[in-house]
Image 1: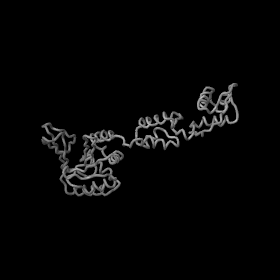
Image 2: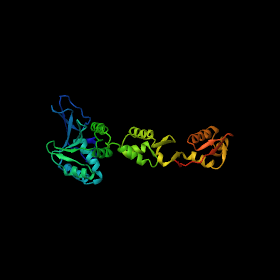
Image 3: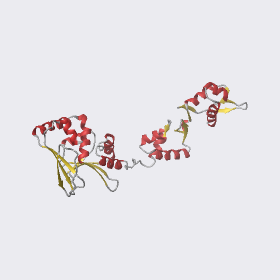
Image 4: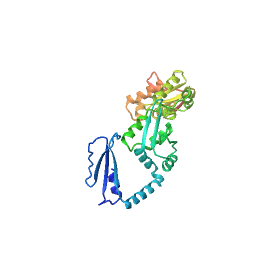
Length: 304
């Protein structure tokens, strides 16, 4: 890919291209490029083969520098440039006590890297001893995740996402979730909405909701396969819009199931099921002559 990109940028016909291959063993690495001269060398320190692409040309070197200068001065390409730096010089370090660190190797501080990190609002420090830019903290990891900075290198991408997904949920002080969820439930909320609001799993939010419900502080209403939660002191009943139309239709009149089904153009069983659900909520009653009548209530009805 590197060879393909460079040959697409420059006219290198009749130029002598060499690729130096370094490997820890004497195994010859085959390069499927006929026009390129390949030299194999042994490097006992190499954990895997690595390559150096070389073309000696002052003219093309000047053109290459112009390309590089144009790219690094384009702020719109900062993310792509940082992605390239990480693919070549970056690594992920994990350790005890849930330590997770993003590192970018540099022999000395780089104005370009620091400019890019500053623009992306990434906090960092340069370690002279390690010769690395050191980036920690969940907020910084979230920026790298959102921009997919580590996705150019398959192995580093995997290591990054494995470490990122192990971040524990943010810690809240005792009863923080319970009290703040209760305050929010002055209006209807779903478990998913609350989970996103507090950056917790839906399972964790559900546990809090169940405790509040057992304490008779909140109630839930099932509407179109979703549970909506609300405080009981709000004196609210939540139903679907179609059921609300049933209520409006039964306002001050009595109707049989058949009459209701004809009005709403549905079968008898469908109307009967909806009326039964309204009956369980104490909103309608079935009379002795098998008609349905709406009941007066002291609770507000919210159609969703």
